[in-house]
Image 1 (cartoon, rainbow, N blue to C red):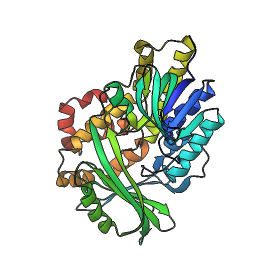
Image 2: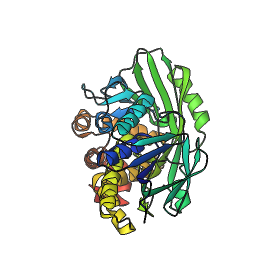
Image 3: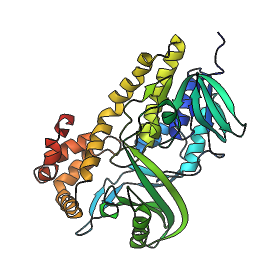
Image 4: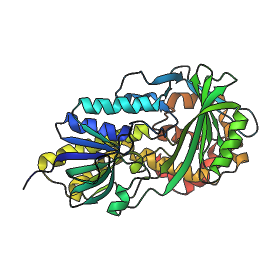
Length: 385
């Protein structure tokens, strides 16, 4: 039997797709990465705030970094803001288009082939059915890594259940006529999630929010509230929350937003996406070496990512569900309670943008916060701590 044209076909050249393509190529696999857009990195669909750990996972130069932030300021609808400032770099504001292109270039340098203006529109008999610049193609593969985003076609084509929640997000960039040195978070800007202002440096900032309904109307009101003079519409996109019930099967592994790996506590997906991509590449390499692509062989991928980030994602989704039932006044009360210097010190010591389970476990047990979290503990989240 003739061998397929490629060991691995990766659908999507975002951070997760490029990370998967690079890791597979570095292990000696023949890799094709198809990307539906003509230019990698566009359109931008990310707030562009990455934790230090997330940026390091991308394994690129520092050229895309535009600013460094040391903490956050949480602004309630009433009362005083809560400032959490570590005094040391905690996150980077990045040019996502440049970051994405550099990650793709690294994958290409490792040996992966890229084909822009090409989208996977179906899977049939071990072939990726594509349409794009080269017209209709049927590309044979041994294993497929689906990194085609939250609205990708591969899951639907194979009959896989999708993530349970999709949020709409919108963000603009412009001049901010006030100095901010921290990320600002506004819980009341969107009742299902939150709004944000991210300092780019040099007097510029990004303001945005995510939600389920009335997102455009809420965003317009929020933009007036922040005072941002928008001159660049930067982002509109979809954020999937809650991992799809099964992330493998039929010679396919789902990574990044395609699988629902966005963090439910922040909406960020680069850290979890790249981590999932590396696990997928390791399993792809093992399957190709053994020439075994059964679902039982692919199940190792789910075991790996569950051990790595599964607990964090599951706990984060419980917190997101809890958020849906908290009125603004309760959130304001929580922010006020968290202004206790002892709690602030705990957050500074144990807080982690990418792995919040530890600090969440500490906060839910704190006497001044327990009453807010007790319904969640009763619903079963205690098992996470």
